[in-house]
Image (cartoon, rainbow, N blue to C red; front, side):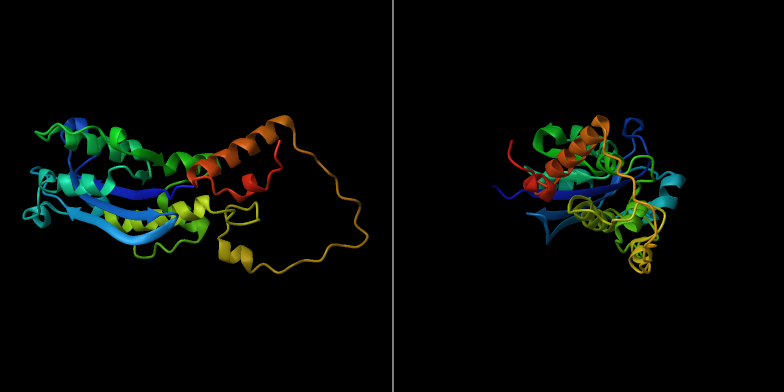
Length: 242
């Protein structure tokens, strides 16, 4: 089995919509090879040559004054593309970041291909919604759910968020986080719960077997884990051959 190279990527921007001329102002990338974070990173701040929306600045805290002496996207484009080319990009809410990346690439005189032509893209927000339907699946919520330390995340930052997302992604695709069905308590709280012995005179427990729909949902769940983990889903490996 070939070793998969992944790049966990995040961006910060001047606003929410690239079609309105908003630009990328920070890019953070973390390399993961064979499900191991290698320590190789790509990180830069960028001068957008435009104002930053007040709402966006409240999220990431990056000011136009700070970016005034930073390089432009075209200055770092070749190094960035060399870092991500051929990798599977792991991005939370991928359409947002990919849309901004494609807008920036479209401004280059060389006319580079779109991100989707150079890299496979895995959206961890879509994956999280499949694994945890009906629950909050933003990065902070996933950190709480999987016990990932995000105490340094007072503001959004592309490199910090990419580092946190790398840990979250590996936790999401590496196995079950908890045997408890209570999603509102933290993992540490669940782990510390004392064991309550069952009453020896209790009535027999009902056995409720999974229906066809539940079995199909289970198969789809395992297929999603197997796909995102590069065929490393242990449950699938233990299934008897048909």
